Length: 88
Image 1 (tube, rainbow, N blue to C red):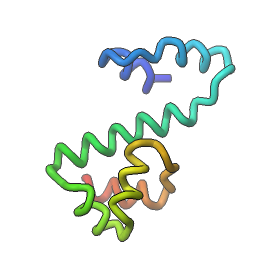
Image 2 (tube, rainbow, N blue to C red; image 1 turned 90 degrees about the vertical axis):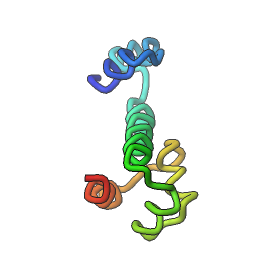
Image 3 (cartoon, helix red, strand yellow; image 1 turned 180 degrees about the vertical axis):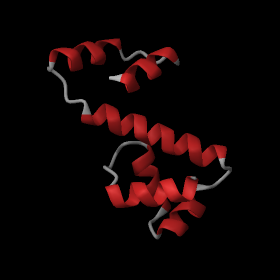
């Protein structure tokens, strides 16, 4: 739930989803994936790295990396570990 409070402080409107999570009527996993994708993209851009550059280092396609950043695909724990090492 801490993730959603941080997003709300940035001006994103997640109030309805927060209430659904608190009442148990909403699956929190997609929200986590969205938050993670945004964080990954922000970090990549902060490091001035292109999709192509990061994807090449991870041995995946730029399109696949973009899908992770846009929360269209779930990222594996192993790949998340590699990204954390790459991004510092």
